[in-house]
Each structure stands twice: as C-alpha cells, then as structure tokens.
Amino acid sequence: MANRLANPFAFEPGKSALAALHPLAKLGFLLAATSVAMQSHVGVLLGLFTVGFLFLIRVPRVAGGALFSILVLVAFAALVRGALPGDGRLFDAATLPDSGVYALRLFTVYVYSRLFYATTRVSEIGDWMTAGIRAIHRPFRGRAKAKKSEPGILGDPGMLFSLVLLFLPRIFDTYQRIREAGEVRGIMLSGRNLRRSLVMLEQLIVGSMVQAWRTAVAMEVRGYSPRRSIRLSAFAGRDWGLLGLATALLFLKMI
Image 1 (spheres, rainbow, N blue to C red):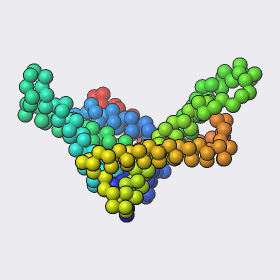
Image 2: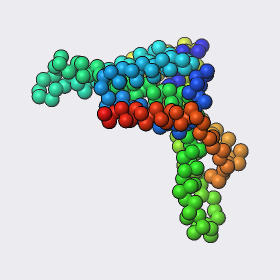
Image 3: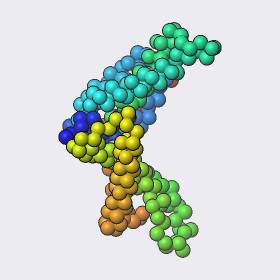
Image 4: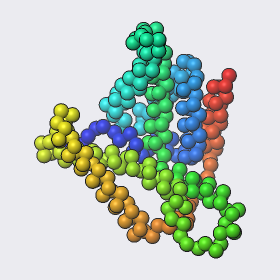
C-alpha cells in the first residue's frame, strides 16, 4: 500500500542534470536564489519561480499533495503577516497583494530548497565541511602531537552534520511505514482520536530510536573513525558556470 506523498527530504536525482553538479556550486546558487527571491521585485521573482518550478516537476515523485500542503502553509503565513495592519483593525484588503507576493517568495524558497535536497547527497556537503575544518586546524596540528587519542565524532563535523540531516528523511520514512502498517490492520490515523494518535506518536519515537541505534551499530561495525579518509570531487566547467550565475543573481539584486 504505497503512499504517493513524496518524502520532501529524500535524495531522488533521477534523470535530473542537477545531480551531476558540484554540491558546493549548488549550495552557492541556493543561497543566491533564496536571497534574491526574498528581496527582488515581482518580475525577477516570477522568472526565478518559473525556472525553479520547471526543474522541480522533473524530479521523481513530486506529489501534488505535498506541493499543495506547502502552498497552503506559505499562503497562511503570508496572510497572517499582511492582513494585520497593526492599527487595531483585524483585516485590510489593501494588504492582500503584498501578502500574495510574500507567499510567492516563500514558495520560491521552498522550490529551490527542495531541488537542492533532492539532487544533492548530504554526505557530499558533510565531506566538504570536514575537509574545511581539517584545513583550518592543519597549522595547529603540530602543537597537538602529544594528544594521540581519538578525537570523537565532534572531530568530524561533516559526519555529524550528515547524520543530523539524514534524520529528517529517515523519520519521514518511519512515519510512512507505521502509517501503512496501521492501515493494513484497519487503524486509520485521525485527529479525532487522540488515543490512537498518541499510540502512533509513540511508535514513531520508538522507531526513530531504533533507527538511530542501528546507524550507530553500522558505523561501529564498519570501523568508523573521525580520521577517515575523504575523497572530494573537483569543480568542472558547468560548476563554475553555476557559480557565475549565482553571482549574477546577487548583482541583479543590488541594482
């Protein structure tokens, strides 16, 4: 009994050309696109949203239900922000156009964030983070030669970052499995039944703890060490082109 609601945090590159781009180039473009989306005028915003949405619909399992839920959420946030003028009135129709633009800004940020998460492995960003920290600490390594103990996972911030972000898609998948198991047994999750909802929540917490324990065991069995070797991908021409486009977007925001 498959649920068509797409995991908004899952890595699903499919046939998207974005999956082949360098993760740092995509991260730089994400920061530029979201910054421009929140501050540019409406024409640039509409163009940015259109391009992002056209790429998004090519990502596998982009469920309409998920997009509709996000759209309702951002519309509500925009309405609350714009419909309260702050002078004692509860509603002012003149604020609706600005609220609509604000909702489009939030939805554009979601579109590009979803594109980044769906086409980028979390481990790639984590590896670059650890490599950067090691490069910063390298000049001071000679002073710490006497300390030969294992630094612990805090000495590998990239791995810690990856594990934190991987928790999101895994807890979503755990929820999907619990929901489907309940439906097979004739147990429908409903907000009207508090006891049943609490039981489902309990199962979700237990399942998440079991998943975390399995991850820890798997890392230990494979001999994980904070001093692990890291292989970093090199920048290609298309990656520099994407960074150039990100720079152009930032320049466009300034004019």
